[in-house]
Length: 262
Ligand SMILES: Nc1ncnc2c1ncn2[C@@H]1O[C@H](COP(=O)(O)OP(=O)(O)O)[C@@H](O)[C@H]1O
Ligand SMILES: [Mg+2]
Image (tube, rainbow, N blue to C red; front, top):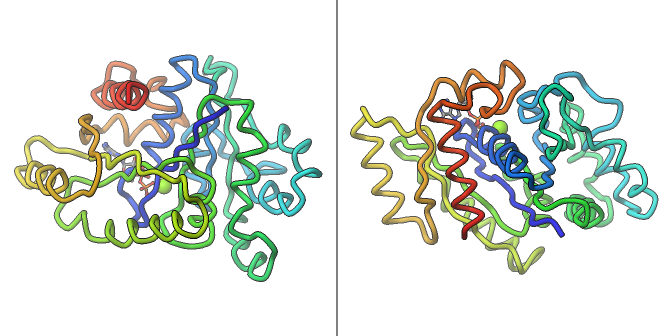
């Protein structure tokens, strides 16, 4: 039965997609059956693993069909894609997104169980995976609510820059609302410091600030700013396939070990 971890922060550009993709790929390298769910209409996670064309059916159809899960479940296996065989990452599968997902919020405005579409989907496929990693959109909208309803836990990437904790309080409030109303078992896995620059003294101050003020665990692993991590998506590859020796690759493997070892 898969553990489902969502990568959330309503701020854009903090490293959500980079974390979702590379955590999922690291788990797959460790031979954990892993599904990466892209629920951001920008579809960056899909592109980052080489799925750059709009698919016939993707998460939009999956969430629409989840109005009646019985009918949808048989369909799901077609929507879940393997990576290119040359990647040799058989343990990683993807449920891709596309810009069309943005219209779902309006289409579901009066729909039954609109908050629980992703939860139903996850519950239908949980037996097939060890880990399900969800890349959330940069907003606090219905897609994020679906994400919080579906997840077992949340990782919050926090960029090592001034004022990065602003907005985290709002996210923590939303998580608490989700715990009270949608998903009482939802846990905070921890905050993850991203884009750390050792030459920047501000970066060090931010680490201290987050470690002192974040209500909960902060991962010991800190993700450094690393140009290879920024280059890999344009090659459609997780960092382990793009440059396994890079500092970014080491950091995400270390994060994965930290997560697995509790
Ligand atoms: N550790 C890092 N080092 C260098 N560049 C990074 C790092 N993490 C993310 N980036 C780059 O920063 C940008 C924003 O990251 P991304 O993961 O897409 O954030 P989000 O999903 O939160 O919007 C992307 O261009 C990405 O390649
Ligand atoms: Mg993103």
